[in-house]
Image 1: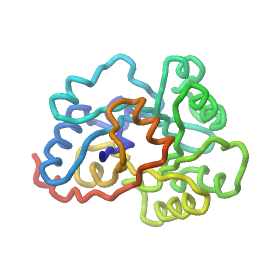
Image 2: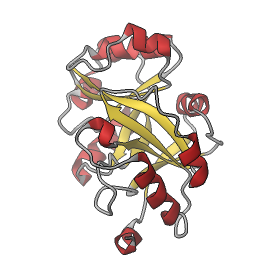
Image 3: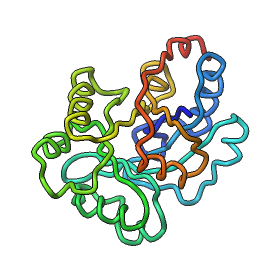
Image 4: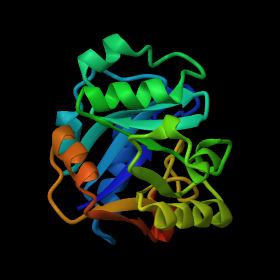
Length: 220
């Protein structure tokens, strides 16, 4: 299964795109390339109110929810968000301590993944140094569609040297060929629910992949 692990909608406040616009575009993309799901990782926000199952069914996709948190070391993707986690951690907070988030999401059954660790982030250098404050990290984002090739290569080298698994995501803020469907993660096993997603991330049977989205320029 191929899933874009890092996408932003207007709920992130720096994107004009809607969930349905992304899903409609992804559905069209599937005519040219296998694609199965999207994780909406809003900045400092978890959408508890909206149920996206009807949209997901309409466009034959799996839709998941996460958060991209703003920590003292940089941005941190959080998957497997629960009500208990949301009571423990104020996800809207700026520069929250990364260690606190990593421990809390782990305690409540989820997983934390440093995003673009070498772009506007201290996660990469901190992980390279072996600092104990990041104990619990086993996965990092090694392929970010909005990062430079050098930034992604550094992340990939870090994952190899330290035995981390790597995910891929577009980090899309807009529904166009520059932003969306250029990077994703290919899972060996089925991923149909948020619980499946967390289980497979912890299992390590996945890899980041580059997507050819050149045909998106034809879509209106």
